[in-house]
Length: 221
Image 1 (cartoon, rainbow, N blue to C red):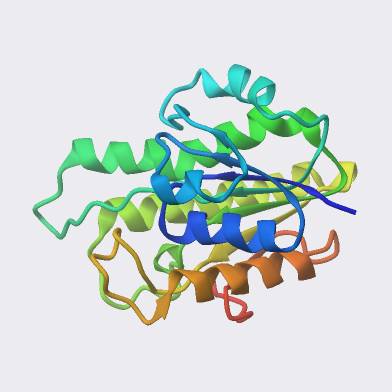
Image 2 (image 1 turned 135 degrees about the vertical axis):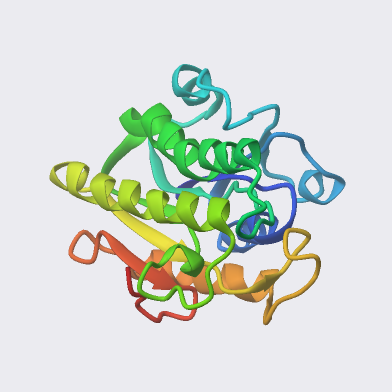
């Protein structure tokens, strides 16, 4: 039976490939984005555009834009990366990354919480660079800390949603060749998406709260 999938951040890169992956499985896909793209519009899925996760208004408005009573899988992929290094740190850019990378996913879950039922799964696309134990190079203050904070939010959500039977995973997509990385990386977006799909398939209430690589490697906090 077709599942109801909601993916946030879908007009390109990993998000677009996630849309394609879930659609290929016969699922009902709702692709949420700030602005659509020709590629996304060609997928024939339900598109909800004009959604900016910086805006607090999504907490009260997003649910009405999703045309399903329940959501089986919610993946928040939207994010931003701003380059920085000590001591040249733009504090406005750092705040922006927290607004989008950290608070954005929380707003999404708050917005759709009533559609998350027993057996639903939530995937928060984070990053390995948010791992404190794995940090051996410094730099990227805004991106690192916003993803570290997202990991904590995800862990909290995994505990708070457990009684409702909703599982949560923090997903590292790998070092992916996308516009965000200026085409640099070790894997392509479609490969990353296929791995993330498999990790979400494996996710259960017993493993809720994991921080995991698209390859299946469990990551250090």
